[in-house]
Image: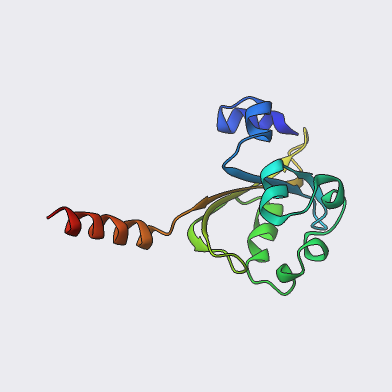
Length: 137
């Protein structure tokens, strides 16, 4: 499963799995969690053992009736999805996200790989730079 991810990201499996800045999970067509990295554990406070096999909507109830879940379904239909500078609904942070289909040897989509990097808002960064510039004068 990680072979394709290592090629796309040009990182080793260990670097991907243990990357300190990336939340990575893999979900099947029924939204069941197949992979949940350590950053997901830290961010959501849910251990991998507890997450695996559960539907994301059951594990994280705030995702039920969630319009952003359509992004996951887009990836599960074969599309690549890229979101930048979006606000996370239940935490005080922003994120950049890529969701892409994971295909088997027959090119059938078997899951979606969800990679999230928490970021400061672009607006926040610009505001901070303006303030720093103003203070420097």
